[in-house]
Length: 115
Image (cartoon, rainbow, N blue to C red; front, side):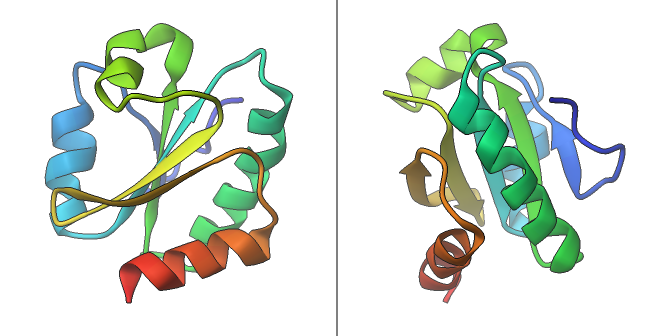
């Protein structure tokens, strides 16, 4: 599940999370998709998130974090299941959800937390 090489969708890890997500969320909101290769709901949610980010070009960005390779980060955010999506804006967590969701539900989540 490799993200597109676009600046809107990118990988992040424990070493660059602060710069790529926390600091960058001051410029644009960033959804962080904590996923795992073995997780079928993760594979179902990924194209939904990518479609939203591509459609809303520049409005929001998507960071992909492989939870298995970044267990400290998953622990820091007290993740209980995958996928978990956390929305950051202005350096702060604005909301989160877990599990695969349809596009309509993800858009409602974004509208609610970015209003």
